[in-house]
Amino acid sequence: MSGGSDGSSPSSRRSSFNSLSRDLDLPSEQGCLSIVVLGASGDLAKKKTFPALYHLFDQGFIQSGEVHIFGYARSNLSDDGLRERIRGYLKGAPEEDLSEFLQLIKYVSGSYDNGEGFAKLNKAISEYEASSKSESYRRLFYLALPPSVYPSVCKMIRTYCMNPSSHPGWTRVIVEKPFGKDLDSAEELSAQLGELFEEHQLYRIDHYLGKELVQNLLVLRFANRLFLPLWNRDNIDNIQIVFREDFGTEGRGGYFDQYGIIRDIIQNHLLQVFCLVAMEKPVSLKPEHIRDEKVKVLQSVNPIKPEEVVLGQYDGYKDDPTVPDDSNTPTFASVVLRVHNERWEGVPFILKAGKALNSRKAEVRVQFKDVPGDIYKCKKQGRNEFVIRLQPSEAMYMKLTVKKPGLEMATEQSELDLSYGMRYQNVKIPEAYERLILDTIRGDQQHFVRRDELKAAWQIFTPLLHDIDDGKLKAVPYQPGSRGPKEADELSARVGYVQTHGYVWIPPTLA
Image 1 (cartoon, rainbow, N blue to C red):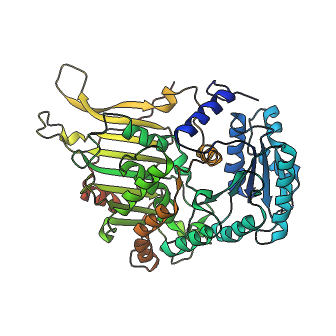
Image 2: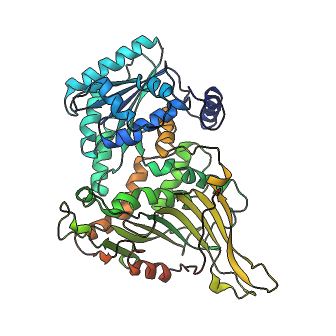
Image 3: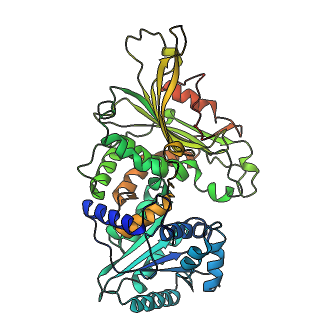
């Protein structure tokens, strides 16, 4: 088996993670591990879950003899049938490693609301555990399924598939978003799952929290003396958190129309990034201390003002036959959040997301205030900005005013740039799902959404979402391939954002 792309051995990496677990006060992880992927024949499992498990295996974080992977779905498949489906999504993997990984996978067929299939699944897991001769049994269930079946599936797991009380170990459940459609439905789902599992057993996954640059946010903020005195209302004018896609719904219009861009992207992904940008320093790196601070900042957000919201829908969206002709579902939204606390009073956080735009990117843009007493008269060129580019071409750069080379005293905008593709040329940046599944195995809930955090997030957006659903706020049309509605740029300017003209950051290349 290969040693991974960073040059270290699997055993040394496992040792370092065990050391980190002790630092974070996480339980030690020993014993045989059963990973169950429910919805194993679906796209999410094939495209994300199984490839993530393979990469963890390839890097030595899960190993033959310690782990067995079970696929569960309604489809009538054999073990080899599922393995061949997974193989199709792992093109380029070394055949020896891939074959070894695929042999860890077993398939069980059954329905999601009937005990017969889950009893059969439990039998298969128990046979593996007995053959391992381990004293500790660990069971991880990954629900790659629609949220509508979570309650019935979790009830089946609770009834038929829990870790046996005769052996130490644990049972943990990963659930995918969306966690409800508004506050009431989210609370109902949380209550149903809460009756079956303790909070420490539930891992609500938001894959944005597994992205490399998102994970870097707390390090940047709290490990660098440079940023500590700057990160407040005295120095920062506004912060934008942006998600842009250059394609539309592409055949998923019927599904997307049930949710819209706010439920799909802003209320979860961008709000999680917002928490890490705006929260106070936690007492320690223990997961609960970090999640406590995220909840506090969410609870400090003022109600959203209708005049600080712009909704858009790209022309052609309703051409999809699965989308109603009178749909008001936004494919673009720009929403201003305001935090009522000592650090951020008066600083607008502009959360913006859209489909069918002129570029694809996700970034955090921190714009600083103008220089007081500007003797160089360079205000028109633009402000200092700190930009964290989450995807693609992961990078962080500081936009500065510098002297333009030459004999004249002229200024221009340039940057201090850390582009990951240049700085870390031989390092593979892990996929978000790899990191989050590994965190679940290790029992680290830092990058997962806690129940009270979920509630606070829905409390912010539910009134706005109900107004949209009731037609009180209308989506304005915009052209595919544009920046989105011009009203969004006008809103950003109105709350204080100053756009830089004549400067474009170009990701450096090795060429």
